[in-house]
Image 1 (cartoon, one colour):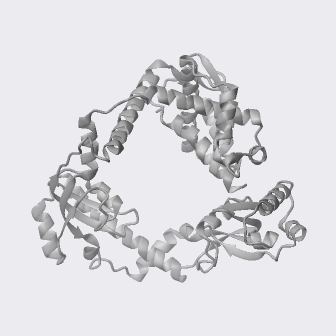
Image 2: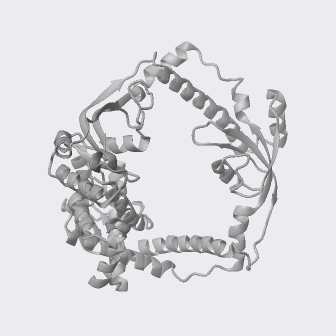
Image 3: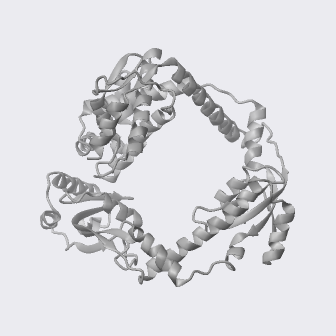
Length: 483
């Protein structure tokens, strides 16, 4: 499936899903009047029944065909399904409409349906063909999406934050903070030393982590030089790409394409989802993005066309296999040591955090740790939340979430950078209403107000409609996906 199609799906249908998720629904408090009644009804909203089959189709529409769907995920899908139905009821209640003419104009301005900056019927038809949809189905979904936009504009449109709120938004990001920090990695260096039996024990208990899926594939890049004998991405080149695309849809394999277009022999590769070979070495000219796209191709497909940043590839899956790595493997051993180190770091930091939460770790303890471990205290002034000259932005964002005179522990996601931080002083700032950046912070304040309005609307929706879930039918759906 072309990358354009994926991009369009993310730009349209992901937004539809986001519109649904804005109104989340918690199952607590939603009673059920189903006492062994019909198992063909999944939920009743204000006496209107919605079938189990409709919910099943809803899941299939949103989930990837290769995705293993868990019971918890089905609960989430039900929440989204209810959210969508409630949105439809609210749209009907407020009378939002979209004429056929307006719908047509909106579809024609979508970038993914354009060729040479103009609407292309061919691109539109290709999209429908590749997503196995009729024009009526797609246009119906697109119309619903646009009506949802109208609804949310109706709820949150027209709000105007006060100057005080704009100043709060500006200060939150631009206030100066004088901090003191201890690099906890300097402390860990003295504590991390793992015996061989601990390394072996970790491996035996986590063997599954060192199994990895590999795909053996044939791959060929369709650059203009290979396809049309030119360096230019001209119309002839794209026409041939379209021809190849249609041949693949018809079930032709890679060898058919090579012979038909007189292409060079395909490249034979065995790789994992990160684009590395059996020895975990990066394969030349295989980006991680390309590798992920290759893994998205189903084993049942004869061949598939992949587009990445205006580059086109044909891939054919030869086989898929799972490989168990051994503890002697250098990459495995390195990963074990890394995980043991992270575990040790977490334990150490958890002990400090527990003391901080119980108010048993003061500034004097902060200073004592520095002296006991012979690690220096570094003093830093953060000019604003975007000042990453000394620390990563994600760490700075965490620091800005706490008040003055507070001691906190901050770490990045992989525990490679870990600091004990004392927030010594906060200097608040204001923005003038004639500042060039005033509009930017006015918009930030508006977003916050709008989000608060959506939360209020969420509470209103919960009270406005009576929702009864048939948990017996829900169990049937869960079993159906986990047979």
